[in-house]
Length: 282
Length: 293
Image (tube, rainbow over all chains, first blue to last red):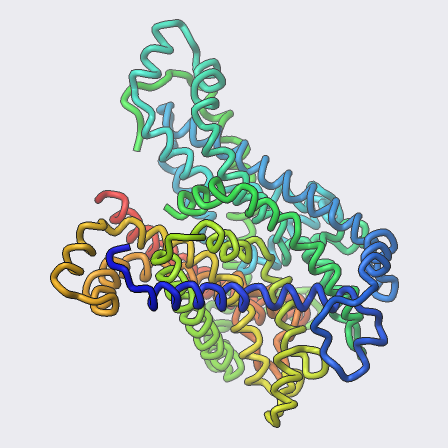
């Protein structure tokens, strides 16, 4: 605060509150709709306040699912999403941290070529190579499996870069001292590099967990068996009911349940999240 | 790029990079090269034989008015989304940077939409704009403005733009706030002592200093709008009504998976790959520069 301008300060607060309300409004209304009974949504009125069917709607969608669309219980979808998000995050971090280690701390033929090959993956989002990637997964027999859901997503240029940048800031004296004491490359990695990377790993985990949880096109392609549906893609099956309106209160309950876990992660680990976000973009 | 002091080992480094390299080759490089190869082929209607046709698929694509329309639509969609998300975020970041009390609380309430999946963001706004039970859709109809995004293409476009921008505000907000907080305070104070008011200071000091951030965000937001908004559209309008929201990424999916036009879809994939690599290289060139100073 450079100077005292009460009016401007008041205006700032007001603008922020309006901004926050605008951002929160869709979620509030989704919640409102998710607590209504079906008939309330056809009465020609827009509900603005939660109804009385919170427990009824949520327990029926969690444990039974919406049967018309053939969707499994949402609890199963949430479990699938959780498995996928954690496997993708852990997998990406693991293979990136070791490949960055090799690239920074070893000299070997094709090092540069491998580095560029990893870099290239940044330029190939799933969306632009859908058909051939699908064919590869099908040929490998990985459709409808957790392996198919996760393994193709765990190559990561950003994570490799992040660890590379971080290793570059670790002083050379570290490795000299370690070698003097007789530590080999594996020992050095486990006892020195890993503990030093702790915060980076945690920050990256937050970002990658959200990345994994929010995957849409990939699970849509790889799963035809409803028992492998994830929440974020499963909602599409509930939206796309031919020739009729979606069952709004179930769809919205699913939407709310599908956003709770990643939102909790972001809000509770805010500092790590912001760190991770800013660093992965460097 | 690399340490001066290194370990000597012939086998270990290869073992360490092996998982990453294998996954990259199997799931990235191989499919991408297949896309490139297929974009030069035309398959007969039964999928029994294919013929090498050089650039015929590309020529056909650029002669096809539906493709060119999708291109224009994508540009409109991407720039509108980026503009909306960036301007909202910049405004909110400036306000959040000004206030002292409650800053952390405001920040928490502004960053959570980052965690909401694009597909879910689409679903939320689809409800908001619903002509019978959505606040905005119903409200507009009640006010006498006919709103029905199931039939009106422009309205469907507005819907997907708002949903896509909504999700991206928090991301931009975080970067703008970080940018604003890294501007040295004495600079602002000196200007204030010289009699420059808040608006003048913003125009002459703050905004110019934020322009690298803004530029970076523009690139990131365009990439987002080009490629990551597929779920927003697929979960809500499905490219309709009458292709009014069919952007390029959606078209690749639709022509390839639903229409089974392999050559044409592959050619579209190749064009998208060129666009995304261009944008990525651009972003990295700029970022490398930022890191050095």
